[in-house]
Length: 238
Image 1: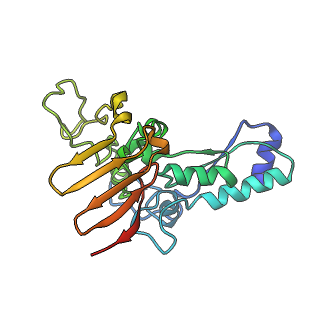
Image 2: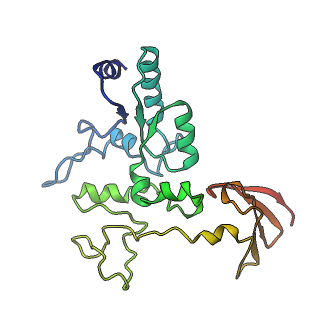
Image 3: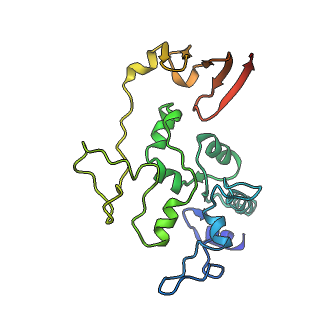
């Protein structure tokens, strides 16, 4: 808190808050390898994975950023505070911005899907490629290899002869390009999903305000929220 207030008093444009990644608690490296700061307890706090404790991997740095922000405001400073660390959904980010930080940073999620901001803005949350937090990317960095994401680096299309490969020749360096669907998708009122007796009924012609009902075999009725990240079961009748 003390440092944050001093920085704000000194006139910094913003404070970006994260934690962890210390050399002091890093694991002993193998002979011939360098010490890597994300292998110890503090490293986990900086880049948590799905193999987590009861708190889970999401938003572990947010309380620290929120506490620093409160201290700044109590001291009369309006310096913006940036937080980061396992922030992957629009809902999560919006909740943080309401009360705990002024800006949200998302590194691994942006590596998994560089277009996720555009997809959310266009109401295409169901198309976001979500980070799985296995730290595949961190493992590459630890071995001083070019960093890519396991969700797309093996998707090598023969029709893309100009795709750049990593130095190992097995991985693409950039994710496949993404183009938003044509505008007429908003006005499709009904769509049949062949193969599982499922149908989506889109009631509105504007995605952000539509209600979507999913009917599946066994008469399970569900509703998808706006960003299609979550499925809420409305009723079940077997």
